[in-house]
Length: 183
Image (cartoon, rainbow, N blue to C red):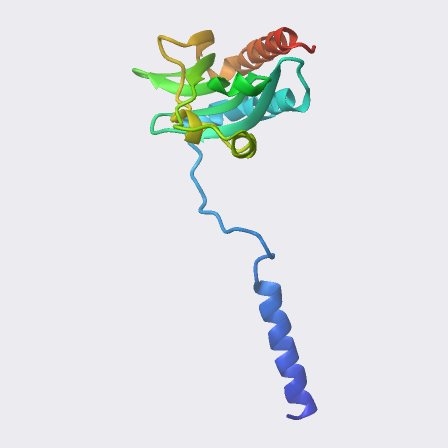
């Protein structure tokens, strides 16, 4: 190969390298933003719940947050359980959901209580798996609160009232943190 051909080959290789995606970067299908997701973004849901995970609590272990989606809803949740060996038996999912009720978009904040549903319990495996999600051990998709759940706030979502929704969410989170042991 001549010196010119070597340079051409080198330039071609460098162009291919530059065009590749970064190592470890997973390609992700672009998802269209739903009205539910937009409403949650408007009230700063994810960042608000992420602050809960930053604190340590004397009696509970808190995990998350995680954004969840269903056919007609979206939510941001954290999940927590009592400390101690038997704390896994009851899990509480605390979150904010945007969902439709007939023709209007609702914003709901609530706590759902779930029972452990797996046939066996292995503390080591559970400890690692619960950090990523609760669906496996509690057989739940994280849907909005229903009749049996504790509803802390519910209102029709109005873009003009987003700051009031954000303040209500902030007040509820502050109260939860106070009850959990920090403020």
